[in-house]
Image 1: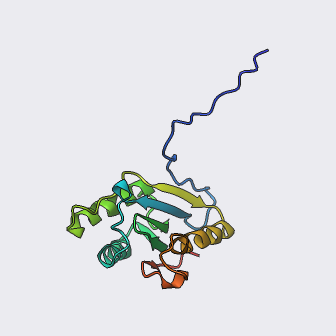
Image 2: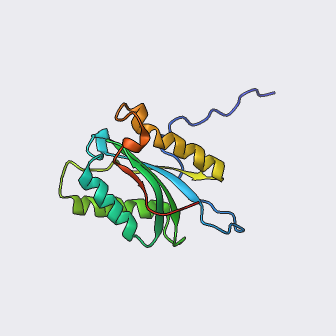
Image 3: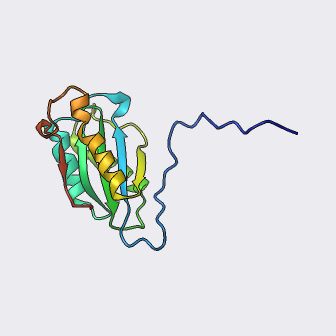
Length: 158
């Protein structure tokens, strides 16, 4: 009898990407995405990056952005697709590239890749939003979430 159990591969540093949707789904899934700045440099929580990202996300025709929070070195965004032919990976790559071309500052670079999690239900979405909304408080940047200027809602994804 062999008692050897498979050992999990702990080498993986990035999640497996891909939004899988059951064929009977009537609404596009909401996906929670985290993207970091390269080297976790704290340039993101500023007016110019905030305005540029809002413009890129608002003018996009492949994915809809709902709530988001920009922190100094990363962002959290909730998104849902408009065009299922455009993968989440392609969409993130697109707006990161457009941002880089338009920002006009070589210091404003993104880390490669992103982290994503599909929100399976309204409760999971609400729980994750509570966590994201409190990020500026936990980081000691503000005392109340509403005081943080680098957040918003572009579309109702409920």
